[in-house]
Length: 178
Length: 189
Image 1 (cartoon, helix red, strand yellow):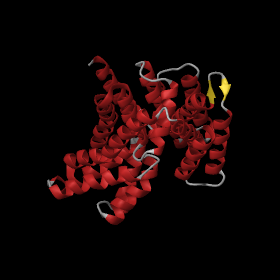
Image 2: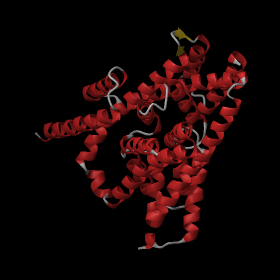
Image 3: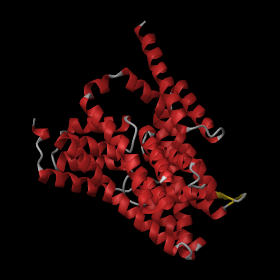
Image 4: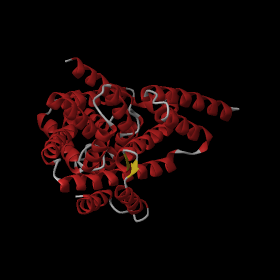
């Protein structure tokens, strides 16, 4: 019961402070779950991969995955509700004051400061995940590194659809690492 | 006020529209934006083009899951508090069910070497997608001394000193408020 409550509190916090969308919220999930002793960086790499290949909002996928992995159906429900409730409440409040909100200097200021920080959070997610996928137990994992760089070139240079890149690498992984 | 009229068929419509949005978009809230716009403005005619832009702006500037922000906003507009609740539930449901199914499948098949190999490939590509997001979003966001400093300071605080992210967010927000105040005072002079 106690762990369920901490899980709920953690995800409420993630939902209330997670600016900039799902990817920027990933390190918040890692830090929160890691503090509770419920997630390793290898679990995190699984969570990121699964959240990206399955449909739906990344943060909701990640919350359900983290909660289910830690405490089964109850955990999944608690984590998913936790991450959703703050957004639900905040939007409903802001909706009443929409004009004030749009013109508020305070909101502009918060946005100006938080946006560059969210880029840092996404980079941090990449570092944590990279460490768990590309650099395992003190050794550079050659095949994953090559697959990662190839994916990056496909995404950045050739503008290939991310879903297609994921599928190609999944198949390559079966062939090369299976 | 029309928006407070409790119309059950519109509640069902809201639920399934957002259910579909959650079910058919891969890549999270940002990928959902154009699809939601098309669905809500062109197909359902719930929002005008201008209202949709406002909904997107608000959803991106508030904390929280962007898709939930959008669902709550549209639901609220169409059918009050109950509408926002139903829409939010709709956009969450597919994720919730799919993730649990995938988790159970992986648990059962995790020892299979082909599944393991495929998963290694997926993780490598997923890491690339995040790095790509940093480059893409960074290019848009990072300009000028202030923003670069916040970016670097936030990264170091998190990765090297493992400082609580909530604390980093609060400090960044306060710095941003100070920065905007300072900039506007400079402009008015």
